[in-house]
Length: 167
Image 1 (cartoon, rainbow, N blue to C red):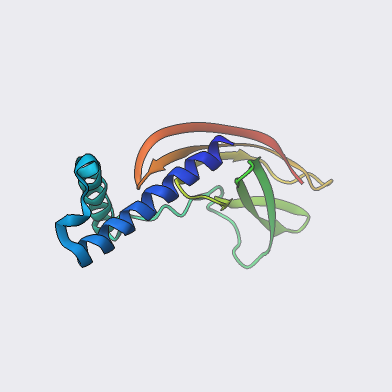
Image 2 (tube, one colour):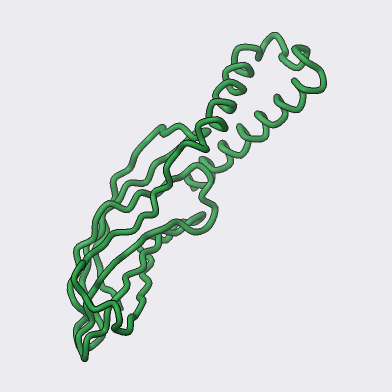
């Protein structure tokens, strides 16, 4: 429930920012009401700075290479694991395996958010896993950081560790 409230707060601030921009363009300084003038100018300033800096930000692909030396001509297998199932969003992980005869070797992994992800950024930090067993299962431990952002600024960072079985 807290995730939904956080996303709604982000949406309200975004809509208020758009209202301020459109109002400033059409009405000028009259859009800033005296009782909310400081807050309105602050939100408008932060929003403009975030728009300008968004083009400079590097995108984290959340991709981790597990094995460097493998035959790239081998067939591959992709397994998906849901790390966390929240009410508004999920944290998912994909593991790619290289098939070398009857051995399934993990070569890379990536992780991502799905659902209503407004106000959140997921940074996949590490994964520790082994080859798939003959029964098609492998144990894993994955780490990452869930950042709670308000208008693009990180307000809280939550470290998360997941362990389980890839099937």
